[in-house]
Image 1: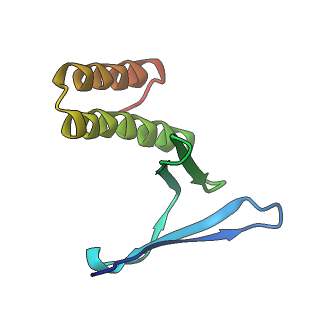
Image 2: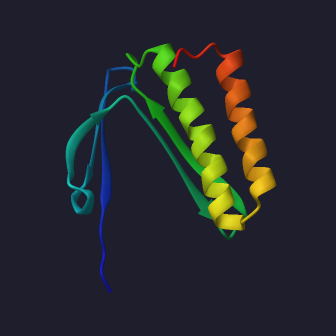
Length: 108
């Protein structure tokens, strides 16, 4: 069996707020790549619930956070379509993403 690893290093300030985050994915050629935000979700089969880690640095600009969230919504629609084959629901999720972009005044 082959294994691979993705790591995220988080440097915290004195108040435990992320100041610097880097991630590594050797198989993808990523080494110590700086990022301002990370969202990870994993499925806990035992409890039938999603577990999440949402982190962002204290200097993450709000406009970039809005763009990040919009792109996550768009990707959720795509992921949902690939996982279920339900084009209508996937399109609805993408519509929600576009409504979010309008309501949050994202400049694209």
